[in-house]
Amino acid sequence: MWQVYFKELTELMRDKKTLIFVILLPVFIFPVIFGVMGLVLSSTTNTAMKAEHRYVIVNPEQAAEFSESLYYHKNFKKVETDLVDAEALAQAIRDDKYDVAIVIPADFSSKRQQVEQATWQIIYNQSSQFDFMYQYFDQLVADYNEKLQRESLTKLKVDPSKLAAIIKPVAIEKQDTAAKRENIGEKFGALIAYILIPLCLLGASYPAIDMGAGEKERGTLETLLICPISRVSIVLGKFFTVLTTGLVGALITVASFGIWGAVIGSFAGMDIVQEAMSAIAVTELILIFSLLLPISAVFAALLLAISIYARTFKEAQNYISPLSIMIFLPLVAAMMPGVELTTKTALVPIMNVALAIKELIKGTADYGLLALIFGSTILLAGIAISFCVHWFQQEKVLFR
Image 1: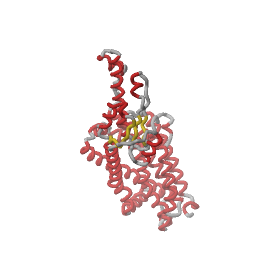
Image 2: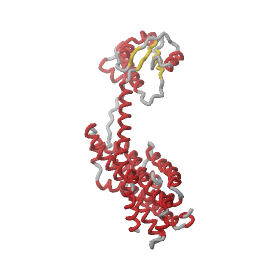
Image 3: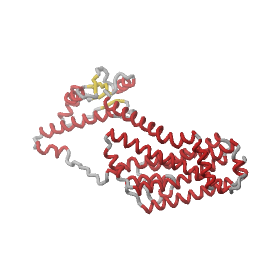
């Protein structure tokens, strides 16, 4: 078995494609991709926050102070219009004549005198993912509302020192009992698992295809089968090679992200993230690796079984694509709000590992549930390996 293992590993190391998939992609390309995505997102957000929004306001004289505060706001630019109908204003926005229209009722002043509530209307395109414009407007309205409340209460001769308590009887002061690490782990723990687990699959995919369907295409599988080595040893040697490349690819990626993250964080001033990450103990990192080991074994066995069945390299790639999609479904479920690690979710393959990694990063892991996850995943890996060994012994599969 080990002779086959070292032989396959040596051949893979000589293959430039393997070096690209296992080493070059994790070290350089993935961090660059995520870095570019982060820079684009940051640039887009900053641009959206600084954008100047063209606005029109109907009946501005009814709320002169509000109109003035809107006029002098750095994110708003006034545009004149004769339109007053809501539908006509909406159509003008669609025609890109301006970005937002604020309609103040013509009887707003009189309603203020009679202490009646008035309804303002804001018309704009709400499809933007960065709706900072409404946040600015909402803050201006909130400040204006508070000012009007104070004026009304002052007219009623309310003690000025009690105005704040009357306007807002209950003030909330939040005190978070969660540590910085727990907060960061809750937000990004599932995302880290979302990156790590597919990388184990990706790192194992090319070697698995090459050692099954690839050998069939090259005609070298028959040569290997006539060697004085049992088929069980052959398939286990190939399996451990695929498992090694998957884990090495994931570990190199983690190390690469860590190094690049430390470099970028030192320039970006991300002290909180660095402090939280430094709180993760070595034992917890070992536990994360221990959880990746059996799930990687499952992937390696499934990929090798598919590759052995396929006639050609391309056919194996076609079979593996649906498997990749299926793996992302439990990972997405693990990232959904409210999904926690329980006895039930600890038995769901892939999702359980993702949730366990998140809990380990948070520092709130239940070691009993971790043992359950580890045991169930090892059992699943054993079943997958047994199937792969059985599959390799079938003549009708090897020589389709």
